[in-house]
Image (tube, rainbow over all chains, first blue to last red; front, side, top):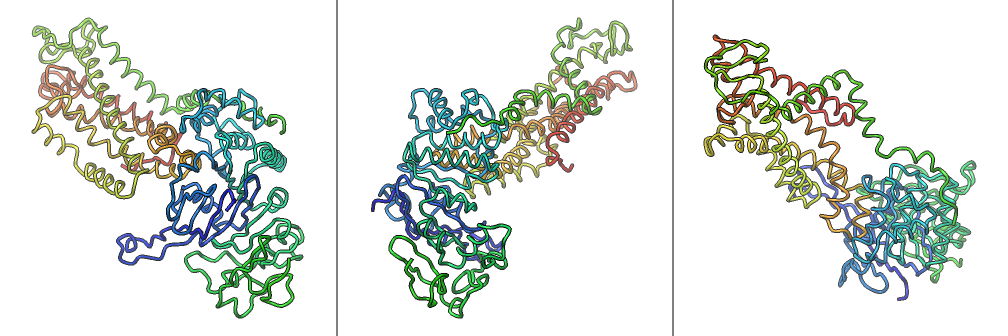
Length: 332
Length: 295
């Protein structure tokens, strides 16, 4: 397998508590599966976007990859080496090659440390640089910040500046993969543009692969090579970005793209009804059927299997969009 | 790549200024200003005690029960010792106990609280049990039991104060740590591969100090009354060493002869506890209204 990052059937479970009885083990509730069997592959030097509503498990998936939440099932392989799952060699191999960029630009920087101290931390933790001070200056220059930013505290930075510092920290150890959790959230549109240009530039110069988590479909369309659509912890559709944008198959993807494309003209596409179902009480059959305008009788009882069309795309839907006969496999 | 981000100006302000602004906010509040003055007076008394021409333990039997005057500003006690000088030296004992005991409590509370808040669940449960057990002891009973075992001494006072105040610090640290462990900057440090002690020391602890300092200033009056109370009962500082508690006790015994020894012992206790309480409450209200404690 040549993929930089290969995830196979990954699941993450959280205990659902259940009050005192649950804690004492008298009436244990089944754990919640925040990520319920996700498989995806990311090639070196490319960008993969994960989209989906809040609570669809995107961020949890990202955290599982860097070992911040335990993996319940499945495997994660990075550069062919197993980092989670049976026979895993541990995260040691991955720490230096994978960096993560968190959602909150300011909140992901330690509030009582200077930018210099924050940027020197990767070198100190891994004991790799002889002179962290020089490295800090190099990193600041790399993300387009003046050298005197080194002496500032996070609360003295604007959102865009803090985001650049976050990117600089992610780049510190020359990672092969950067996981970016909502990198554009909370930033002005102009700053978002600058950030995306910066990320593109870094990818071109350093060959960094990005796994990007976002709600922002415009961003996905412009920077991602492949994308996956998550719903209740599963990938419902996955494939090349251009293919999915031009002809979504899953009804959820279709609705998501329609809602994202023209905010003023909601009538254009099929609207998504209702709320995201609870992870505690997953709907039977296809988990999207209670909100789907195209649900068939079998959608209520039978979970759709994976329809794969080469490596170009795959989806899980009994009644996909843009296909004449329901259920028949379609050519993209 | 684009030029350095343009919105420097807004972020450029700041630096060390906020701390001065905090002091100004305390002084602006009449209660805070009064508290600050009283605290400064107590600290100055402790620092300048040696400037007094009198010896705090020298007995002058011919001058016993002198009324306040130019020579003895607060009068003398039943052994003819200068009360003003004894009060100044008493401030030294009070602050010595307050600072050493609070420092030990703070250090212990930080270590145990962070271990409880950041460590595995069983450790959290065990430490909480310890905190609650310690806290449920009445202070006076604890003091009596301890002094019965070790005899009265300054160390016994410090030990009682540490046992009485450490659980409070531990619980606050634990609660804050549990919030901070989910903060993105802590996750970022963990994702980098930083070991837990490093994360706690560099990323968690600096953010605990602020709320803790407020708690400390609220606890100091409690510590001062514990010291004075134990010394009054003969469980703390031994005579003839001057402590506000022993001064008060002497005055209490000879209240029919002269009211001044009792006043000299009581007044500084009232002044110091009120001063630290005013200051602490103002700090708390200004910076962290969530820390309001009941009782």
